[in-house]
Image 1: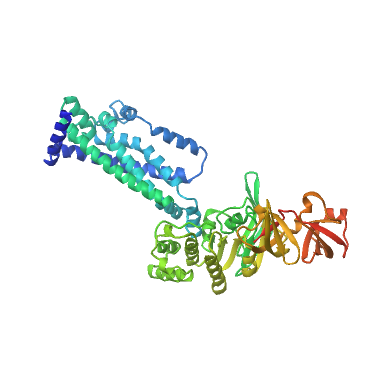
Image 2: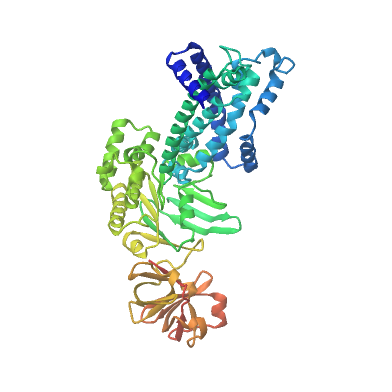
Length: 234
Length: 340
């Protein structure tokens, strides 16, 4: 326990001293996680929306596959992406390995199913009468889709928050595809793993505290939006 | 001619929800669509509102055939608006809801404000303009939904049970608004209702739907009834004369003592003497006063104290022909009547 309290105390001092190394790592983490979430939302939101909105053969199968992909281990994604972007991979000439881009590619693969499935859930909860109401008031298909999207907005925002939380806390992809290069690809989670390996608990605990603070903030947002969605559904 | 329908069918799986041979509706009139639950009223309104497509048949709107392709339906929906039985309001204020259709039509902000004020005034909801739409009561929601539909000034307003689940005060307000819209703005109005009394009060014409088909019992066999007693699964009603009518509790008008009842002429059977068994429940003696040939059958008017119309298939009539002034007994099944 003494070790933990000492580490916490040191972490606090490190944090208030505005340690540049610490903020550099936090900066890389936030940049990579934000870009991953942004790109994944550009793919996952329309996919989820269309799957929820349209009726087509194999819809249930597609949803089952997406649900299955939620359980995809980060190490598996890391291995697959590695095989494509390593020197011997088909995208080897692009020299993506051990760059932030490589981490982003892996993380996008990780959270597209998260965003898509939660969007499907959010859209499916929206009362069908919104569609007919929009149509009878003169909306075309696109305008009607906008109505559904707006009615589901809290659920969709919650999906994005959940996806962001997933990528900022993951370590497998960042380590395997980013390589933990200081100042470039070192994220909070990979730095924590490294510091733990070195026996340097102070920075590891400080980063852990910041990560937990982010997780707390994200969960607060998630519950706020989830609550709003529940209220709207009543 | 507003709508002209021929051989319309709407089928869901094995069920034929709607099967209408011919129906013509004129502009500027008020039509009521009455029928029991599951008669196909909502399906017909959805087709008339261009929100649903018929499985077969032809629909002409304002003289032009409707092709039920997305692009054309979008154009037609600009002229027709449907007020659902359980309308839903968009998240946000009442103003935002009413402005929605106007924004789609690119109406400028100052004009939108004027329209919002006018329609809310019309439905008596002016003080709710900035209220959260999801916090309104059922009656208020219905009035705002009506205002939202009226804001876009449709040529045709379709209403599915506009007074269902609404208190008496709000019912009167809604009916009065509908009447005013028709009278002042010449909006063609078609509304589904369970209430024969509303049909009698408001409508220029009444369309009766039963099991997805138009009933020939249009305006026939409509009597005032007063609840006398409830006896197990049967409720006993006193009609205008000394006649009584027992009906199955599930068919009866819930929550009201006095109401209108419509007896389907096709469900009435004719006998020389009072029948035994189940048919003995509602037996009225009378004299045949009129016999006429109608499509595929014989229509008889029987004087039982009330003038009761009976419709008999031709084959059945030929088996046992009747004569004028013949004494007969009418048997009405307990599920042969439709209330309010």
